[in-house]
Length: 273
Image 1: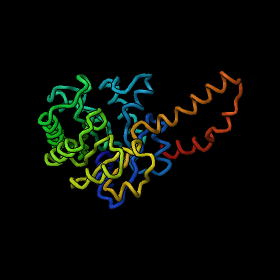
Image 2: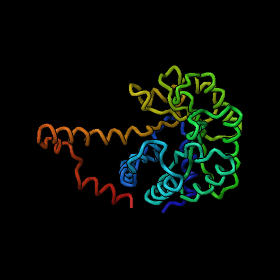
Image 3: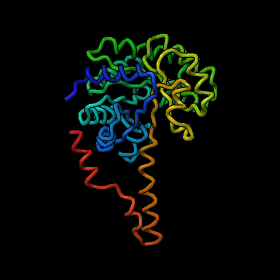
Image 4: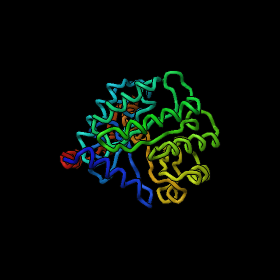
């Protein structure tokens, strides 16, 4: 079994790659094991995808539920797991620090902290946002495992269409020691190029906002890591919705022809044990 420190070191090495790479987002242990079995070198949790498994909307998962989710995914896989840790699950900085320490105990190799308050549904003021990232950096430095910290600037995702402020926040997060920068909501290669040109640290781009692009193009525009958010989860849900409509409206089972091969899935799951 790969140790947490080995996973952290492998995760850090991935971010030194000169070519862009994909970090897909499983939503449960089964999907995590399948993705590892297919050959991906790291995985990231998805807050919306995990919330779906509990029958809830994004943002409605408790801290204890998230920690258990991270613990299960980390134990089930031999590759790095990056945790979407939202805003640290608290408005209070002292609690965020303690929550990060608890998160580190789950076996994850990295995590992200965002500058959006889930409680007040607004961005943190600039200075507070930077302070929270800096506190996360300092907390990681005191841990027994070198977790990779990703700092997220959320304004493009939250309706504040201000690229200059996005860059300002990312540069500040970089300056206080974040390992990776991330601004979900970038919608064009031109935007991506503008943002990454202003940064030196590895940058994560959310591919679900740029469906017409490919890995090579995103890499040429400065992306290092490419994530999917909840897109894989919603892609998996769609066949269930379509099959439901067919059965209710037509009474047929044509959808059975699109099933995954059960034996092949079982082999992938066994291969991850």
